[in-house]
Length: 252
Ligand code: 13P
Image (cartoon, rainbow, N blue to C red; front, side, top):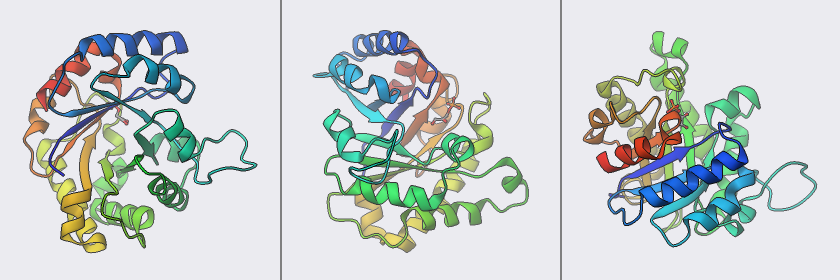
């Protein structure tokens, strides 16, 4: 897939009122925007209202989490088809913050991935990334391959099913220090090779995008825009300011 994508992950950083206010600012800022695809992922409670605000413009809606069953006694959960009903086109799966605080593991992430693929028009954004310790011991390649195999293994994609893999080195998230661009390029290469092993060259070319996340800002975005194999960005902190996020989206 050729067109680049930039995704705002607002995490749980805003109140409901602040979320709607920022959505309105984004809508105005991105009026008439063309170029990369731009997605906003607010908290679950605000999805429907944010969807109404951005409707008709270039911004798309994404969720930060999803459950793997479609319906049933699963207190507190939200299904892929509900996200679709709410207007979502994307959903983040297996973010490292959920793996850390909610103890999500790759078995769960695999089930979520499968469930999302079952809903037409909803694209999974599957997060992978190593810990600082794993990087130091040169285990990163193995960690990434292992995470990808656990999350995506054993699944055949149909022709039009799109997938985004987000490489987010855990140590770079929220630290203010992004990875060195060459290091990102290298990790993206490992991910691509691994995906090719699992899905074949053609499927990887047509159905997958591999994006980077971790301390991206308008100051460092230029270093990541022309990297080989980097198809877009997943932005946390810097997406909480409409002007800053616009600069990032403009740059890629
Ligand atoms: P920061 O951009 O704040 O480092 O967050 C990255 C991230 O976790 C996006 O999902």
